[in-house]
Image (cartoon, rainbow, N blue to C red; front, side, top):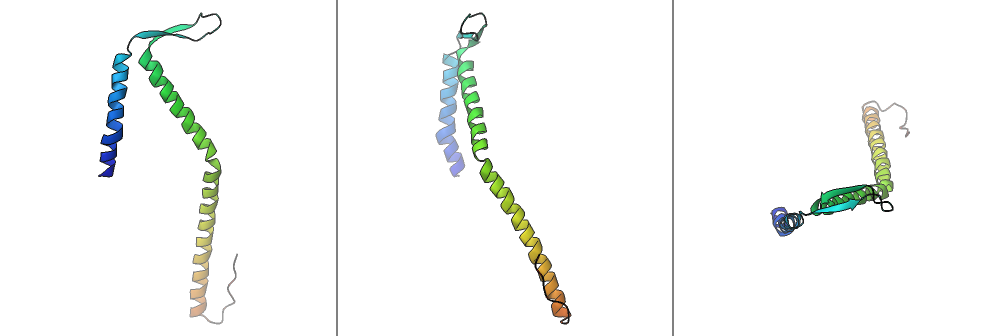
Length: 112
């Protein structure tokens, strides 16, 4: 229920504003790719520049966030591996304990 409420409250008005922005800024503008000589000029609608800039910013921000969280992903990987090893060792010790209870004259339990 809260997701649909959040969608209606945030995403829907934002979509309406972006559509109005695109419709209002359909006029072509010159995008100069060579600031010194001015030879490379592309004519594109202004809304494409705005949306392209937003998309590029989202990509760069997402990539920067992904890079900055690398140490946390590494820590999670190491802890997951450690938990797996400890689970495996606990299962092995339980099996040894069960077999020792079944046969009391067996050697003592050893940890890895």
